[in-house]
Length: 366
Ligand SMILES: Nc1ncnc2c1ncn2[C@@H]1O[C@H](COP(=O)(O)OP(=O)(O)OP(=O)(O)O)[C@@H](O)[C@H]1O
View 1 (cartoon, rainbow, N blue to C red):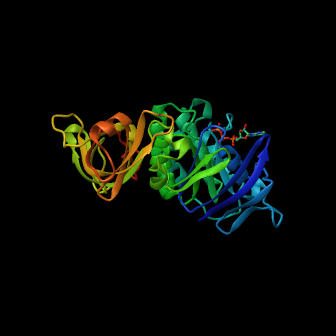
View 2 (cartoon, protein in one colour):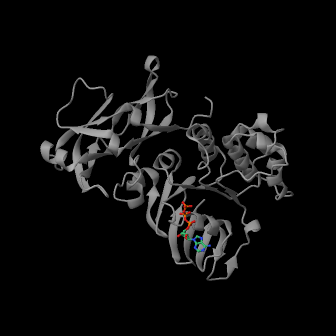
View 3 (cartoon, protein in one colour):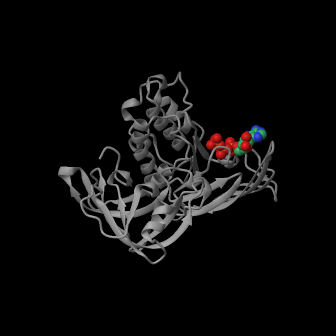
């Protein structure tokens, strides 16, 4: 299902001119505060009416100012999950969930209550009221309610923003599962590179109301010059890999990637697909293979490019070709001179084991 957007919309002194197409299962809208992410999400939901343009999900045209189409929000079948769950406090979890279904009575298709409850792991919460739930549990219920309304598209506007790190970690596997199993395309607003690396297959980077970059997640994230991405301390290369072994005693998983094998903290099932985020600031570079160091992961490659680092006059962004993949390393300009680094120079990239962000398609709790 393709989401096609091409809109122009002015609000106050801000002009959004946003055009992209995405067939991703989960498309992340990434950008700093005020970039226009919520404006775009509201336009897709039908909460605002862009001055000009077109929005379509598959064959369904939601907006086309050229031919006067503006599908009202209740007819769009676009689910919306906000930062906080916005559940009805006086209803139980079950009643909140069924409230979503109520709007689509008489229609067939879409997941039933049992499927959604199982998908999100909320069976034990059904009789409770929202006031007694944790933030993460509330968000899972809010997602369930949106899913039961049989959306053709699910919008999630920073659904984890109000949660602490532990609650985020608890809910992320469910969002991955939603992406992989629910069969509903998701548009997900985030300003965390780690979240994008973990969840997105497509990324739309917004900056000042325009699309600064768009494309497959690994490609876009690995482009260091894209301004709002470069500001994130965890920005770096994304590697796709397969779990090929486990060192149980150390709690480490061996992942085969196109850049070489890597040892990653945490135990994952053998054969599983994983994605690794290797932040550029976590990569050191040596011209000779180092010995006697604590870094578990040393990859061999050669310098493929050197670009000035944004907002950091002392550093550069080094692109290192390792096998069929690229790593990014943030190093000082002094190191570049001292080591005589230039394109084609063979180097060893040292990656601290703890610097991996990893995601799998494994079911939550596995
Ligand atoms: N109703 C409005 N009237 C005037 N200006 C508005 C209105 N709503 C939003 N804006 C402006 O439009 C711009 C984009 O806002 P938007 O909420 O889309 O950004 P965002 O990327 O979602 O930011 P955040 O991450 O902070 O939520 C901002 O400059 C904002 O001040």
